[in-house]
Image (cartoon, rainbow, N blue to C red):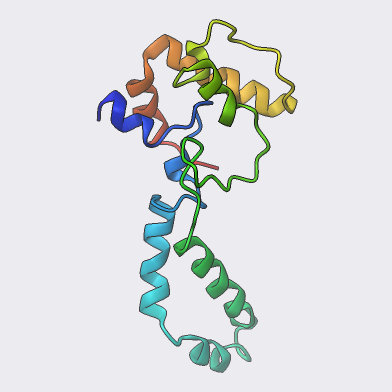
Length: 147
């Protein structure tokens, strides 16, 4: 994968939008569609199983979650179709500063107000990209759990 491909996945702050559960072209969306389709009308079977296994009483919730994941609608932080619930100035700041990632900005690390844990993770990701490069950073990230 090259730099341009990585830009399709990584947000300007360094989070991997492509592995987010809300990303419309992400792996979670893709993989959630398969069991949803294969299970079809399984809710009838779940109802039959629920007296012996109360876990199946929650099947409609599970089905709803699969439905939500498989119809994710966020295009990622670089897109015009961003629906990320995280309030973050980086989504617009990188456009104003004309950089792909925060670490490329002459003002990095900036003093924008962020939640302490979010700021810590933001700095770790950007420092790592500075040290190893964007492509290698992405290769490291895809091996980790997103959440």
